[in-house]
Length: 212
Ligand SMILES: C[S@@+](CC[C@H](N)C(=O)[O-])C[C@H]1O[C@@H](n2cnc3c(N)ncnc32)[C@H](O)[C@@H]1O
Image 1 (cartoon, rainbow, N blue to C red):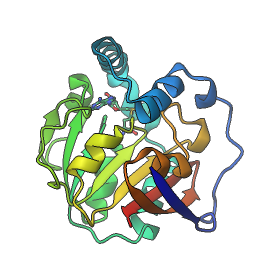
Image 2 (cartoon, rainbow, N blue to C red):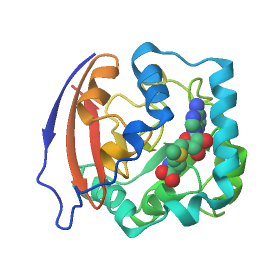
Image 3 (tube, protein in one colour):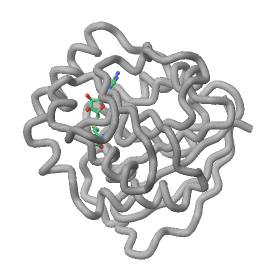
Image 4 (tube, helix red, strand yellow):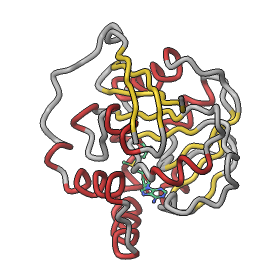
């Protein structure tokens, strides 16, 4: 429930002139209630699953842009972590997964929306359909976690992430991503004490948080 954030200089080519979009989106309220009030009901789960299942057929073509990918790549390159096994939560159509593989990581991916998982390419590691509010993984079992534009379930992240593992958090439209938390709120929402390195690249922002 406490943390520090060190911001790196923006990567070359960072775009801070973002259109107003996510800050007015209904998922922003859901994001904050999940992170800070631990509010996640069966009705919310159904609504979120239906929302992303319905968007799955067009998600990849509308969300896979060079400017959005830049933030994921920058987090993997300047975040200070060593590639290895990683669990990606809310993996969607696999944009983040592709960056992981390209950067030498070995992902297991998980998403609530089965149609999103169907859109994601095969051959990049196991895909699991499930709810990140109750992860089907053992305590301390994830050497690293990646969340790209994904809800933060702080207690489950804290439970499954290995003691020395990094939480890699990316918003590909920075503060205009609907599912967005600033780095300062990521470390504040997590149980215990965390320190994060944060940065911006392309249209996005990211932080890599570790326990202190
Ligand atoms: C905004 S999309 C991001 C997808 C992908 N990471 C990207 O950036 O293109 C959020 C994803 O998180 C998934 N998601 C939402 N709530 C979830 C939960 N409780 N457990 C697992 N996945 C969830 C959605 O189904 C969706 O695919």
